[in-house]
Amino acid sequence: MSDILTRQQQQADESRRDFLYYATAGAAVVTTGAAIWPLIDSMNPSADVSALAVVDIDLEGVEPGSRITLKWKGKPVFIDHRTEERIAQARADDDAPMIDPEPDAERVQRPEWLVVIGVCTHLGCIPLGQGGSDPTGDWNGWFCPCHGSHYDTSGRIRKGPAPRNLDVPPYEFVSDTLVKIG
Image (cartoon, rainbow, N blue to C red; front, top):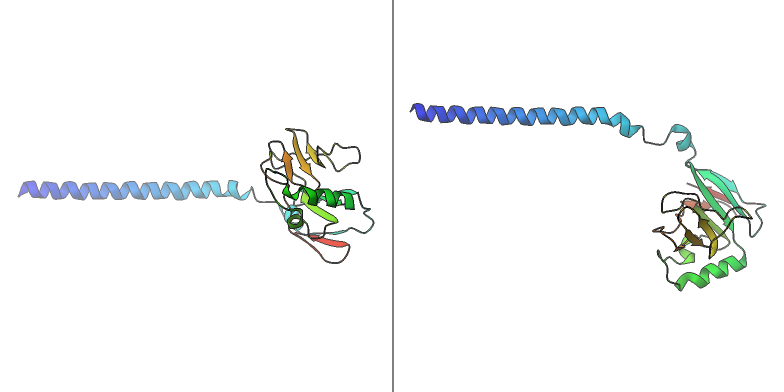
């Protein structure tokens, strides 16, 4: 009989010990989460960046062949007023072998205006090609000199280590010359 009581006591002790382990581990997880949350929350965009979540840009006066840069959510946005030659070159390359194939028509809302985020998709550098004397790479688009990524006139990656095309931000034409980004 005492042997049975001893086993029951051992089982009760083990059950109590297991409960204490689980309760302690649960409290540690909650405490760690409460301590880490402010750090994670600090990685959210600041109020001034969030305020720029929507940008309106008037494209009147931007001549064909010109490229402009603006800032949206802390990132550069490249707007290219493409000439007929650039549009034809982008469309002709639709069937060419590419790292990230995407037809030009899926990247633009209006053929004459290309709107892309000007951040290389390899390591986050800013590609060259916006200025008149900047190198534009082998396909007359943009060139990232850091690791040699070449983008075409539609912002598609054609050569180099970048894994995907320049990103297209959410945008819409509010009027013939007014674009809303964001």
